Length: 228
Image 1: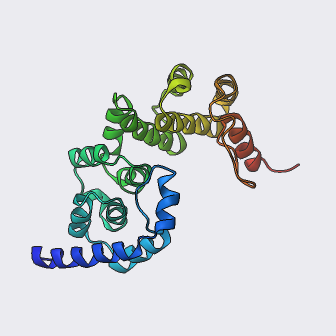
Image 2: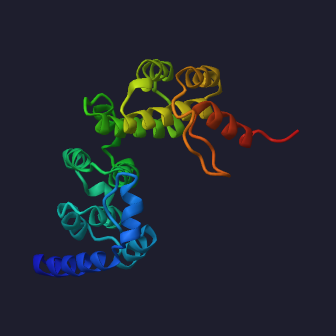
């Protein structure tokens, strides 16, 4: 697709996104720190129609518009991005949904994911560090070999209580997955959660599991344990 054709499609897509923007949806999203008003189901339907288009995805990302960036991550080729490109994109992704989708839909599928995990994990920016912790949680669940789980629990025990919100949430997720997936560390993970009380009073809708680590760990483990 030539530059002119991409520009034409870009204009059409941006107009369609503008038409999908709903003030009520925007108001709900803004309460969670997001700045777009497009229903995600409609966004996914648009992505399905567009199919994979890497050039268009790059153009949509460059607009800086959150709805356009979310769409970009649904139509891009994750393995086409370079390591430095993904690092720059993460640092540009300041709203929670864009940040979350970038990590989960793009970085996790990238050949650079482990290198970025290590770099972001120790980053002084707590939002960037939260991405490192999210990738670490993925390894705790799927590829734990080589991870120092005791060392991770040491860091969580020392830093989670006073961590900024986004980083605290990511560290708590890692704590939960260590307790759920690794029985030999379960008692310590639950103990850390009980002592720190992070997210203990988090409002949880009926029929949903609390993110408070001791409750979450016990609930998920009980679901996996066959009834006698």
